[in-house]
Length: 281
Image (cartoon, rainbow, N blue to C red; front, side, top):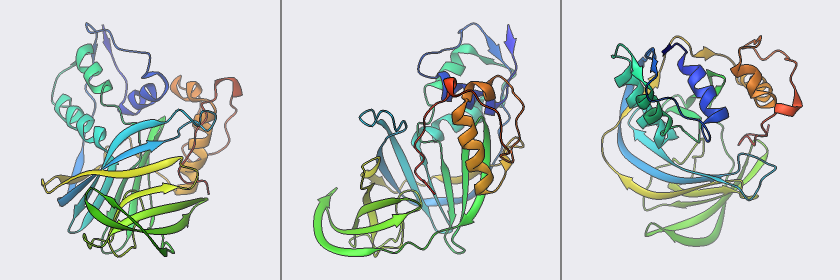
């Protein structure tokens, strides 16, 4: 039997049921559309172990994944490393007439635990965010100017001498460790502005911890997914949709009425999925 659904539906399925579901290997599926624009090529890549609390009701149960910071001349990109692997498979599958259940399960194995994709323009300091909440959304904003407090404490990470700095960002307080031995003012997610590369940063409640574990200079395409199903909204609209989605993810998955502008939707608290966004404000 052949099934037809969109890539955004697949991501919603993964979000709700990835831990307990698989597709029948004998099933077949219509290929996903795939389209991406190559914006730059990385000159250096930093790999971070990310540990984070996704459910605020289970503070001792953290998700673990590896993210990559791709540093190019014009662009910088930060995303879950599994996203690169899954995009590669989706691109490959897009040229096929149909996808088998086995291939879908291979794709499912590379689902991203950190779903946000961030691309920064190094000149204009504008940021493109892509994230999932039943559908794939995209919004833009200017990189925040973080106010850093430089402190005297130090420690070693990956053999590099690091200094301590602290800042606040959208409802959370952070402690960062940066090295002037790598004079690149960058770091994971939106964090930058220090006189060296950030090798570790965590919020003071330890809900989010990014720690560098490896580096290389393998050239990688810094690309932007621009499929037609990606919805362009404002940050405020996305946050409303994200909240509604987590209040009742099954409602979205089952095709209920849904406004991408974030207007209020009646939800059933019984099916809510608690979430802990890195940006609280």
